[in-house]
Amino acid sequence: MYLGLLVVGGAAPQTFAHSATTRNFELVDEIEVKDDLDNQPDGCDATRGAISEIQTTFLWFNHRSVQDYSSLVESLLETYPEDRFSTVDLSWKSADGERPFRKVDFLGQVPLDSKVTKDLNSEITLVANGLPGKGFLVAVSRNNGETSFRFESKGFRYDTPLVRWLYSKALDYYRCSGSLETAELIYKNTQVVVENNNLIISTRLARGSLDPLLSNNAK
Picture 1 (cartoon, helix red, strand yellow):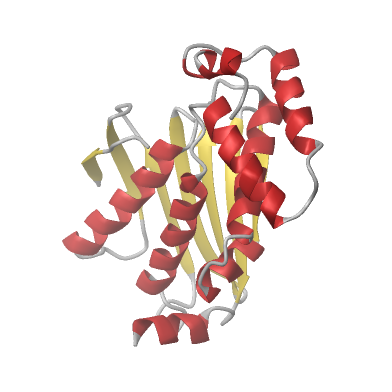
Picture 2 (cartoon, helix red, strand yellow):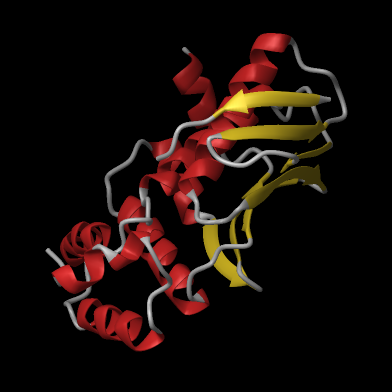
């Protein structure tokens, strides 16, 4: 099933600000900025300050995509609750089309009604459009009591260590943000890795780990 979707995009040295939108950074420039921020004290206050500086240095970077990813995980858990779906095997991938237009290929074990399908795919493309890759792949699986989520932003054009560092900082920021309990547990069980110019955000949740929180949110 193919769905056409409309997607909208999502105090550092000024010498970097313009180039952030027009070219890849030279690695030496990236290391200088990264080292400067890494030398700040550890802790949540420092992380919040670092995110503010990062945003103005790397204009293509959208830290809110990590928050959007957490919201997507919550939506998927609500759509495929454990008491109704003991096993899950789902995937979404970008097909033809690039920003701001995308076509999405969905492979699922059961058909969803049109509103749920539209809402989920809108959330997925919102996350994808905030991440640096040209394409994306989303996979959700549930086996042996564990639910796994994987969002892969494929083929970004920036330096690999920089992308890993930026999105790891973003994850740290939201872990410090005083989120609601459900989001807090999702961030705690989420990691960021980079493989071959693909940014991967993944989450693994044990059976029933979020059930009480999801039930409270639904009331």
